[in-house]
Length: 222
Image (cartoon, rainbow, N blue to C red):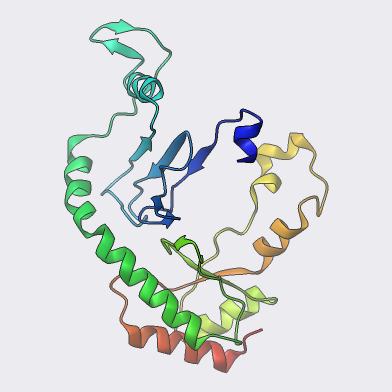
């Protein structure tokens, strides 16, 4: 609503949101454009690189089709500066099969996340479920004030974790020229320094959630 009042188009970053929805609308249908990633580790992943753009705007859809194919409006007629972003048929075949499983996988991710919520309540700072929609739970990202020591202790207990992501965008070397001072985005930087991704994938047995929770309780939560 804020963007619309200022005539600012909203582009959704849906890279990790396949299967999520908000107030009955799927991710990718809320903004002017939605951009999905089909990287192999994503909820809907191909065997290699790939992605998709969604839009309700026929003109934008036509332009995206041109840009992905060297800017061609028709064979050998180039009307835009374009690129070679065509998804090859092998990746499409993989995705067409996996797409039929996406809903089942998304439900299972939510079941596992709910189980984490229940067994880790009061033990560790965990994400809150969306009251007006459904999370895709590409990751289950908790937070811990001594993140590195916490991860090392879990690793020693046989539980591998990950960081998504250790360095926020505004502190990346590519943006040094922007001159962001230290703590210029304090909430972002605090989350980046404390976030830890716990194991979660659709085929994960419920007993593994219990094992992770048990390890966390032993090494210490909050």
